[in-house]
Length: 293
Ligand SMILES: Nc1ncnc2c1ncn2[C@@H]1O[C@H](COP(=O)(O)OP(=O)(O)OP(=O)(O)O)[C@@H](O)[C@H]1O
Ligand SMILES: [Mg+2]
Image: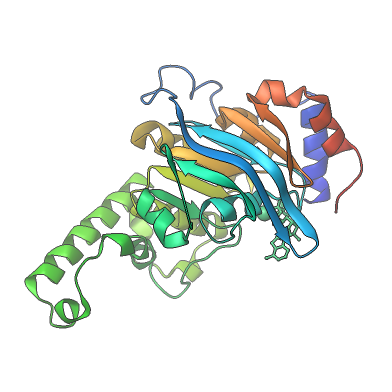
């Protein structure tokens, strides 16, 4: 976390800048939402993850409700990314269980998780810089490609039909994200904010109904953040996608999340609506107390 981010956090915790993020309408997600918040869809129970002597996550439990936007916050190294990595099978926690849509997931692998309908973006951009926007988004359709190598190599009707269908889906996504005019541009030539949007597009291409975003606004300027917020809300509101979002900008967290989980030193110290979490003494201590950098 940068000095600037820490300062912003401090202000947020002291309620000086409460609900002042410009142009993001307060309460849009709670009033008249298309997809009302439902029952828990993801249940993480007593997860512990260790790397040798390092305890990345300790006995942590939380759930994510259907259609909600849940933020995960916490100081650097608190275990936020590790938590997402456990949910999507990159890391295997030594203890605990993860249930998705009522089913306890055994032997979680990234492939299995994708098949179940969970997708994610990464803290650091993971795009093919020389490939176009559309081709990068097409990568997200991998799960929906059933033709075998021979069918593709000889362009047999099944492969051609499938390719066309996938392309149509990706064209819909670029329209949805309002990036149609740059769809043929190599991703490496785009500004950072747009690249992050392409990553979101690729996650959407999987048609997952549960999306995890690891710092989708890190390194963005105010304008880019505002734009990303707009699309996170749009995805949630128009597609009904349940979203888990790791974010350091408390203005953003306050404005777009329904609930917030706070991690500190690998442990969940608070879980609830943004206003409640903001007033939690343990959260205030975690941020304003000893620096963890
Ligand atoms: N693959 C790994 N091998 C060893 N230690 C790891 C590994 N991944 C994470 N850790 C450690 O686990 C702890 C939690 O890291 P994690 O990346 O989950 O934190 P974070 O909350 O996402 O931090 P940040 O805000 O900086 O992204 C840290 O101490 C980190 O060094
Ligand atoms: Mg992280």
